[in-house]
Amino acid sequence: MMYRKKLERGEIEIKKFKRETRNQAALKIQKLWRGYWARKMLGIRREKTEMALGMIIPSRKDDVSRAIFEKDRENRMMRHERQDKSRSEVEETYDRRRAQISEREGYDVRNDIAEEIRAWFHEWLNKVGHFDVYPPAQNGGSVLIATGETLTPEEFLIKKMEEKAAADSKKKKEEKKEESKGKGGDKKSKKDNDDEGWVMPTSKVLKTIADVRDEFDKNWRLMSDDKLKQRVVNDIIEGEVYYELQMKMRKIVDDLMRLELDRMNDALVRDHKDDEVKFEFPGMKK
Image (cartoon, rainbow, N blue to C red; front, top):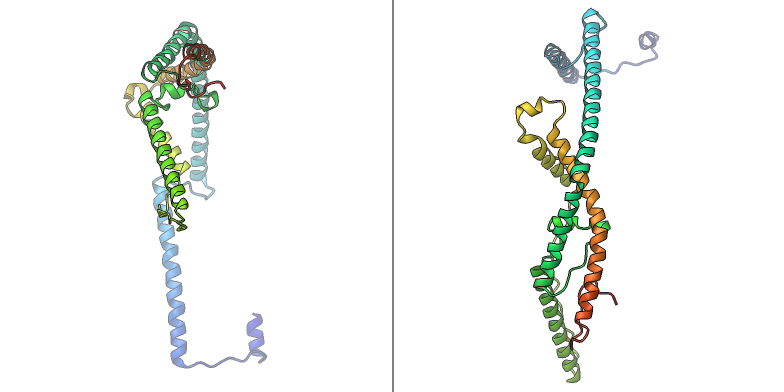
């Protein structure tokens, strides 16, 4: 309205354009309008399709919408009630099975762990002549032994030979360097720097995804349909209870085995005190 009044009073001067320019402007406006209208119609059709398939809930406030919202609310409440009931049943079953298994099998689990560690002691003593360093508690303790994450006696011997060869090689290079200096050679040896290139960093996210996938495969993929219908799956609960019992007993056994290892190391030192070559082993008390 304001524009029209200013136009009637002559305050706004109408610019005159060529016919060709006016036609191009009209075509551009029509093109933009058709595009906008086509997108709007496409959105309306998509919304109707999703509404018909039950993918979305209509926002209009009529009897149909109210019925849909009410049904959705009832479903949510039912789902929460079932989840709470299932959670309570799982917790009760977990507590009951933990008490039963701990009372019945705690002693046996402790003895099995101790025998496993003693077998590790004997293997090192027979193949190397001394014992390995006991894995520290902050790194997992004897869990590392059970999972094979410590050095085997063979790996230890190979590593020791490689270190000795590297030390001998370094010593020879130093001797040659001293000889060249004695002869007056001042030439600096150039070291070839191998360009390793860019190394992709380890992704924590990928590791988490892989762990979740492995846990799913372990717990659910091979499970029968009958067990999937159960509200409480006893196999998974017992697996978690046994794992918790193992971790609890390992901490106790680790403390006892460290004391036993200290006594055996002291006895080993006394047995070799008269050796001509000084007897040494990893973790030896100075």
